[in-house]
Amino acid sequence: MSRKWTPWLLLAPMLVVMGVFLAGLASGILQGFGVIPAFGLDRPTLGYFHEVLADDKLLQSIGLSVYIAVVAACVTILLATLLSFALVSSGKTGGFAYALIKIPMFVPWMVTGLMMINLFSGGGWLARLFHTLGMEALAQAMSKVLYQPNHLGVILAFIWACTPFACFFIITVMGSLRDSLAEAARNLGANTWQSFWYVILPLCLPVIRDTFLIVLLSCFGSYEIPALLGMTTPRALPVEIYYQYNHFDLRHRPYAMALNTVMLILALLLAGISYALLRNNREKGKIHDDGGGGI
Image 1: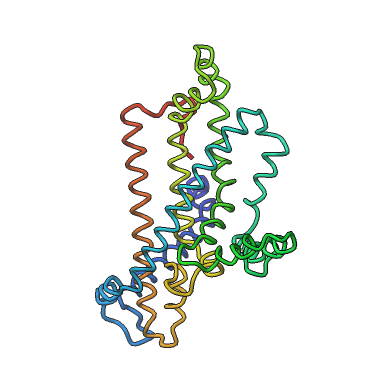
Image 2: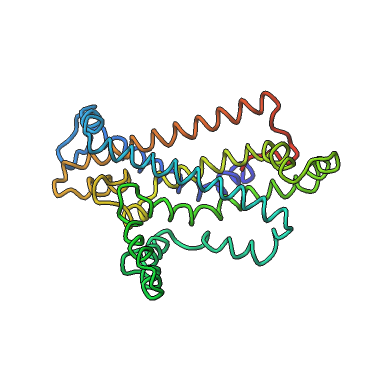
């Protein structure tokens, strides 16, 4: 009897945590359908979702979050792939350079946002440095990085924070290939670039794709950096949800929860697409056990 219940007892802490999470998730979805008995709302309706999707301002927030996440994720993966290849080629995957690159992984995103303000604001460190050096054009350009319609400051902050994270996964697979298939390709006459483009990169695509998805969803759902570095209007979706959630009228709460549900659906859709592509590649035999695993 004791052995029968031992696995459940060991799983109990995790089940409690998962239960709290799922209960909160279900409560939020129900509130998005307008079911909040404490506020006198007890009839489920799709009206809040209809109003959310018909509101141009909120649609702009969704589009802005998708734009920021896609651009930041694409640039992050490109830089991480090239940086990983440079470190692997130079044999510095375990040295000081790699340790230095990993530092942003341990910096909270709130601190990253504050660092960007200190660096790139009109009165920040870089602007004052360029002014001291007599480079007035560059000093003036610093005021065009943050709080701009293109959200350059937000994207740069995401790139700085996420590139080391992406390198952490890509460099593991790339390092294992460097000593096997890539070496064989060079022995057959391929140069460094050909070895990277035709051998290493194709075999790293699964982990690159998975890492891209993680970075994309992280940037899409982030609140701190867009709140600190983004424009007041239109606001990124997580920031807009926060403002809607803190509306003075508590009956406005279902709008925020409907937005949360929309963001959840978009995230699940992206995850589903990635999983389907990965599974399709595995069925076609494009992913091999040697260096082709995902995260």
